[in-house]
Image (cartoon, rainbow, N blue to C red; front, side, top):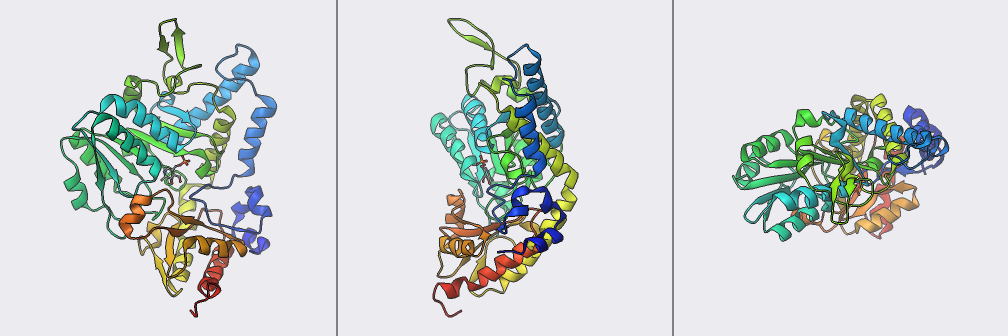
Length: 412
Ligand SMILES: Cc1ncc(COP(=O)(O)O)c(C=O)c1O
């Protein structure tokens, strides 16, 4: 268990997070989900205590206020990703749903047999299975951008993969296993030359770096609230307005219509065409509070803290015999994510042994089985940091790691 007082003294942000200020745990599973600051919890409680009604439906004042808060949250997201208009921001449940929306709505209506879809081998299953489905249903061909053992997508691989048949490229800005960044500028340039759309999975990047969809010139971008200190159950899909306009709805039903007759329906304008049913207004309000908090801390500060903690963790891990670190040698190329294996010990055992010492890390295939197979491993242990982590947690993690092999009966 960590010394809470020491951790709070080392990192002034910890006090903003009720769970971190109470639990003497080293919480190092931030790539799976982050903790929430009190301002996010308060914003959600305030919505339910003072403005709860079904948004977008009622004409009475309370419902109008609920609608206003929901639409204000959309504008907060628009600012955060620098989208051109609020109509380009669709609220979903999470990254997975956002990517499925693009696959079912854009993919099935725009791709055909003979077209090519490119994904990188580093993708989370959420940015792979939807494209497998589109390929199966349309006859398009799914092609992979393979990475080098340290997770690099080389110019050579990119150059060979794009053809005039490439219609869609789906990539994660940051890998959830290796923390490596994709060479997005090059990918977008090659996609433009081929006339393909770019779908960006920003689930792991949005919490750690500024996301400017206009500067990046991606066509779609998806991220989840819960990984950047927002609530679970709220996610975002950014899409260029012209593309969203021409796409059919993904889900149909209440709230996404203009008129309904016995025979059919006309749909509501953007973004409501893609938000069928009662929306997660409190989630959107909580997400907006998380984005404001994130921007107050600032991405420079976030990167500075994470890189320094990553360096400390890397130095310690390198001194542990029989440990193999995956990905880059450089701390700046991990985005706070450290995946590793320990010879003779299953990652599940590593995680269980660390848990007994109050250290929370993830073990398994991280929803990226093709990548793990490509790297020649079946599962890894993964510690992932966020700016609110303290040196004390990294030290507890390293101390516990040094005992693992001995606890499993090895001499060193
Ligand atoms: C890179 C990446 N993409 C997509 C997802 C899926 O996110 P969610 O489960 O919030 O839909 C994750 C979650 O770990 C991820 O790391």
